[in-house]
Image (cartoon, rainbow, N blue to C red; front, side, top):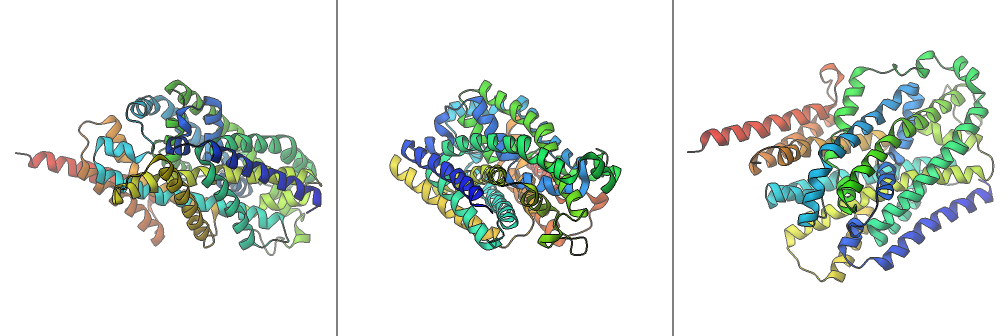
Length: 478
């Protein structure tokens, strides 16, 4: 890379760290640290939600889908639009009122309110495991991007650099640092895509004529996808809007219910069609570049092949001129960090509030609580970095983490919020059976009926267990 690109890159990372340091000095208690003092507006929240949800994993992952499927890969984020708007209508009005009344910090605290402390503890463990996986997937995405564009840096060093930067500014700055950096990062990403990445890449590969001559017509169609894939995405992604700790933290952080609902509508629109089509379009451009030999000089050709998720960063490294390369890389790294920081804060909140405080029942003063939260965040970040060093596929890791949480938590939270007389034993068993079913099916790599995702069977098992146990307990009552 040219020294100008490196300089732009350094400025970007210095800015992110500067925001973390600024809010490190502003945070006075764990309410500031975990939910931004409950005083944030709809645009900051909305941009933070979309930056988190369509961050590094989905940005790199969408590029991989565009490389493999073309425009049809955009349907993945259509499920995000549905999830955002549905939860804005039916979830936020309930949760926002409960948050104001009971001063909640985390998602599992809802389980303690409707069920009991044991249910909340199990929910906290499940959520923490899922978000540690999320954090790892984002660091992996950043390392893939860095190793493909900074040829002087191998994958391991790229992972370490990404991890340290993300963990440090998140760990010291807390939720306000996360949300304000997310806003900056999303603006950088959108500007980079709209004004740099897409137009320059389109011109470099030869325009629409080259695209049509190189790729089959299915790449320009929205129908180049199996119905099972859309169902799998829908069942995995839509429920996350009801069980995602990052999302509940932002509901709690909003000034009011109205502000939170507006934020969710904003996020949904930006996810699809805007971000969805930008991501898969660039991925499709990388497929054209690969097949026309533009990557031959750096070792990728038709005989050696290429990881679809590497196509996009390699394309940017190939076509962008000095200066713009640094800007575009900053845009994609901002996408990575905007999700990594939110997932790290979610995992930290679960571990600190829902697990450690429940097990050890320690009481601390406000400053000690804040310091403990920062230490927990930094420790979890180190664990996520270690986990990422053993993983290979960004989108797969992230969707598996989603599936694990959704399978265990979706049915119990629906019953808690919308059912009558939630049952604690049924909730515990459905969490364990639902999550375990999904994990076992994933590990065994079985050929499931109709090619459906393991998460569908996990949710079904969770629902079956919950309502079976509830029915049996009802029947055995004297």
